[in-house]
Image (cartoon, rainbow, N blue to C red; front, side, top):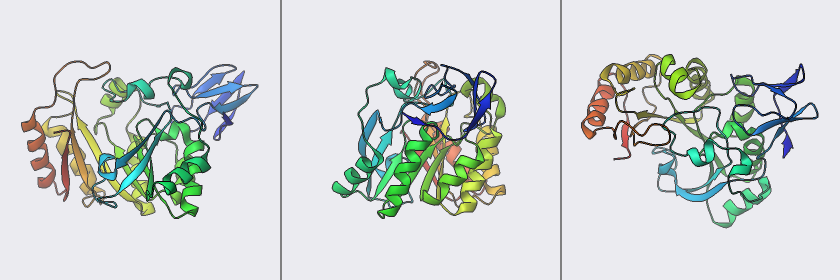
Length: 287
């Protein structure tokens, strides 16, 4: 546990300023992410130094297909997410509190040394929402950067600009998951809003980090030709036509057990639409 950054005092507790939710947290309470708690008038990051998942992955699994291809990364995660997507693929660790998942104590230095010991060139902050454990990610990323390692961010991008800008000098690559270019879908199915995500993607692009985008095509929700075209036109109209786009197949998970998996023909048609809109590099995932 470590005192959290990006918060201010509020009546009877604190207000978290890490993400656009701006949770007002009473004494003894937690924010929507479940991993930040008010104690004695201060906000604490409960999962600091307690990763619930550590693995060695191909960098393509993040997915990053144009950043150090053929290499492996140390994948790291703590519990927590500030979205509540009904189809979450990792709900057993993203939609729970730190005490509800197995974890092991690793300091930031331990993580960096483990990466070096295994001869891995990069660390990926992944599986859940890394911004909900910002302090741990930041401390690791600074140490990793100093030791010549690359830092990879895998995120939904729902964060305020101040914490993002403070982290960006230490991030080398990112894959950001856009749920849909539709604010109603964000609000109804993910418990978030679209605008901050788009703004943060443009901020990352302007910072010069390597960027790739993922869009999970959920059957009957965001997989129409109109939805795909809207996303791709947003990319090209904002100068992101060279950013690789990963169109990924949905499988029933968590609170969305129906409908079935995205049909293959839907994915192939979506790729055609992306190319026709000017996106230059498109990958199909989960097929």
